[in-house]
Image (cartoon, rainbow, N blue to C red; front, top):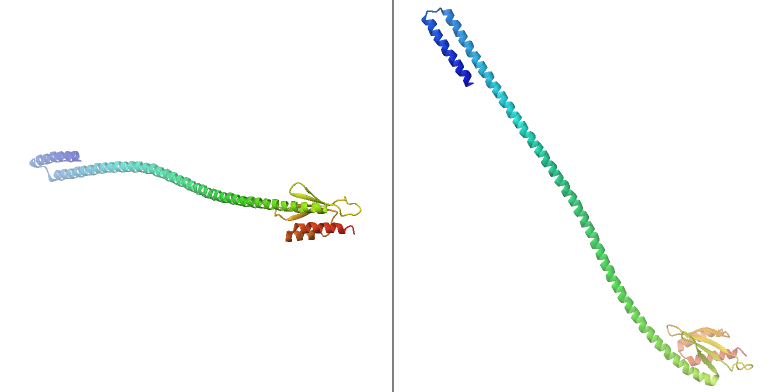
Length: 249
């Protein structure tokens, strides 16, 4: 623009000198008017060229600025896209890690509950074992006491048997499993050696139980019940012999 203005100033000065020469030579007024028109045309042309040039430069500068701004925005947009993609990836990773952590926490909770249940089962099992041991100890003590009582009763029976054996020909045979067989003789007058027998057993509770009788006596259950109530075994033997004798009447 400054170059064009210098060119215009140079042309104007030349024109002014020409006009001065022409005026000095007494040129007619028509020529002076024509020169003024030329001068005005040149001036307008110079201004127009200057405007167009400046406008072109501004348009080019604007296009360059727009292109630079567009490139900057495009680069920023791509950077933002990469940043957003990285952010989304990180967010997905965090959500995945949260899911894994939640699953681990649930698994740990289940394991803890299982451990608590197993611990409770262990405590219950220990208590049950202790209870069984105590129960076994009580049963053992009870069995020892019952065995002692049974032995004492067997001794008593043996003494009673010896008395009956010497007086009434009663034979007592010891069988297996705390069983005794009682054999009476001298009952049948036709055959004094004919045996009348019954087998007696002391059960776990220490009670008298008749498990066989030959010949059978219908009243044996009543006699058995009575000896359990009175614990008078001598009377029981006497009553049994009496009932055997009644079978021969």
